[in-house]
Image (cartoon, rainbow, N blue to C red; front, side, top):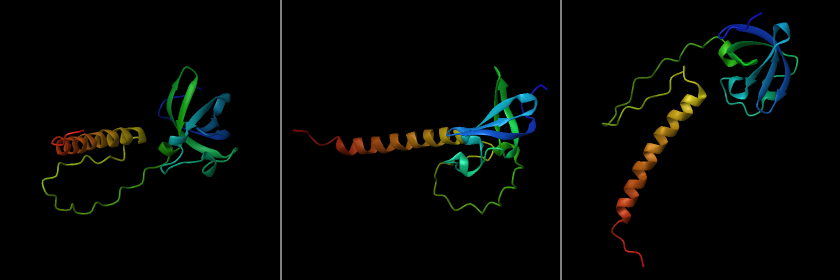
Length: 137
C-alpha cells in the first residue's frame, strides 16, 4: 500500500518518546506523530494523551525518504467556530491580524514573534529618546 499525503489512516501506538509517538500502520510501516500534532491543547507529556497499544486515527502530513509524518489533531473533525462578539470601539489603533484556526502552531508563533519584535523596537526607541539628554560621567 502506498501512503498518500492527506489520507486518513488507523494505527496503533507502538512507542512513546518525549518528542512524540510512533504509530504502527498497515503493511508493517510506521510513522511519527510529533508532540505538536497530538492534540489541539498544549501537550507537556505525550503519556497524558496516548498509551502504547492504543488505536488512533491519524492524517498523513508527509511521506518522504521512508519517513512518515502523522497528525492526530488534524485527523479529528473540526469544531464549529464560536460566534464572535461585536468588536469593541477602537481608537485609531492599527488592526491586529488575529491568528486563524487554519494556522499551525509554528505559524502562530512566528506571527506573535514578529508582532512582539515590532513592539519592542518601538519601546526601545521611546526609551532611547528619553535618555538622550543625559550626560554620562
